[in-house]
Length: 102
Image 1 (cartoon, rainbow, N blue to C red):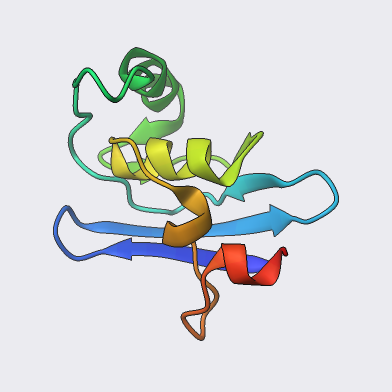
Image 2: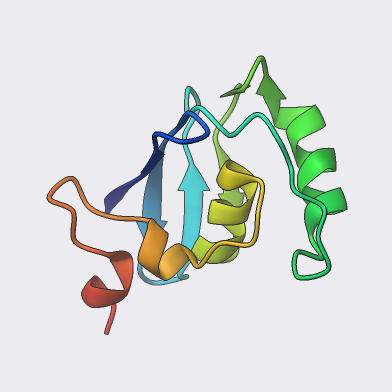
């Protein structure tokens, strides 16, 4: 299913495909990610996100589709901070992912 994560503050405009059978989420090429990765005590994945962005992001835009094992990891990649993917990823109609996968 196609899902979106948009944040005006930070310039995030991401598109993804959620695979219900594996519960993985693929962030699609052309998605715009935040310009910063926040290093906080709460967000232990910052270094991993930075490494992934070095490989897959140029000028804030994802250069190839990249699949994550969870919606939250995909959301962390896109937002650069600790993010609940089940709430943040939404359908075109604005329905949260968590409401669709019960």
